[in-house]
Length: 548
Image 1: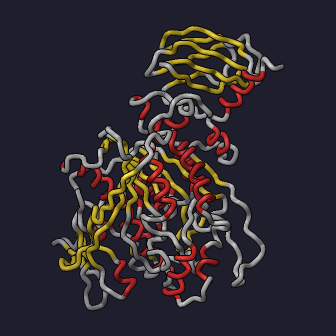
Image 2 (image 1 turned 45 degrees about the horizontal axis):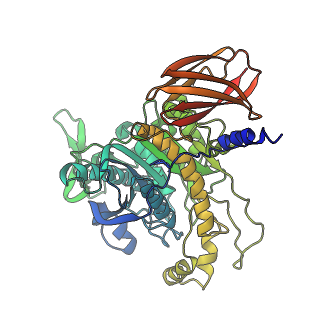
Image 3 (image 1 turned 60 degrees about the vertical axis):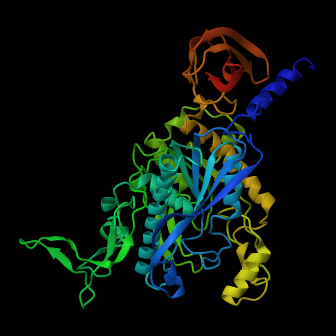
């Protein structure tokens, strides 16, 4: 019994993804310190945020923070851009303590990515919409317009980082061919829209995106002719109106409407860095949704999604977006489970499927994700049935990775809303009970543990550094399950040898290979689950094999 214990422990370690190998860049924190460059203006564009304070729309700068590892000598690092939550409104005004590039969860994730060797960017975006209107058309139109501007801002962000590499001597040491975009909450709506909305003139003309209050003249909520193309690379202006409040058409000699007159004194979009590409390699979503699943199609970038099963503000399947503070309906959207279903069905996530992840985070996610690769459904405790000191009840948790200074938020809430002491703090945690830094970081452990290997694969980072046991980016095993023979091939390295262990930790087969491709006979093995240990390039890859 004592002799078999080491082998059994080896198998256990394989299953939970523990490796004795050295740390690997992009998967492990290989740097200890991070430098943050606070960029107050990566773009300038027209914002309606001043209207929240009774002022006219105005040109405003959009900020970002850029995180880099200290002591790194590489100058071609992949970039991860992340957009914050906040319902396109400032903190407190949005009814939340979050909503900026300084959110604790944003800072935490960007810091971790930089320590792993990435350049991480926390990007801001233009804010402003009218959630308190009693007119559903106003609520819907202004939110969709805010989301549209957010996508334009994200594209400007991507172009900005490329500009720094091309025109400024690459001060942040980026690789312009490897860019990932993601977001939290509202920022995730931006990242999903960015990844899928490519023909706004058509895809924004669905019935749910049109105001039918005047049946004789249905009006799209978002008109690219005025708001700018989805890339935000054209100069556009507000429409001109006649004395009756109707847009003035431009009519040719045959009476055809060619467009509408504009007010050249009122721009609605300013192009930023239009000469650079908007391309990204991958998108991720923490607690967001897609405005319409018809936007997603074959050929879109791979997507990874995280969501709580009963997120009150973003449905995991198809459901309604509501105003966080009033509960009023805004628009129907499609959540993470639907997004991942179609991403897999269209083959967009094949890069993840083919990687064959067997780590602990993947194993845990697969229990609740309906078999959809790239989906991690977070299970949170049910809400308490006991009211707080102000008689309000807990909600389902939607973003358990967030945390904040509750004392500071309560003081801001009191000042802005003339609320009694303690109300802001009590209200802020209704959707995130037991809010703490330790709790938030634990959820971020799960998010990054599942997400980072998929970024590694999507960006093809294995060609730069050694293979990590957790991530099998270049080895293919087929068929799996198998009955008679399997083929093992590696696109980057010679396979030195293989060892095959049964579930009890016993070595049942070993072969020398010394080739990048080999056929292995498994017909002599009993049916069951095996662990295949593939030795190559001074490291090894562990894969699960099923023999039928």
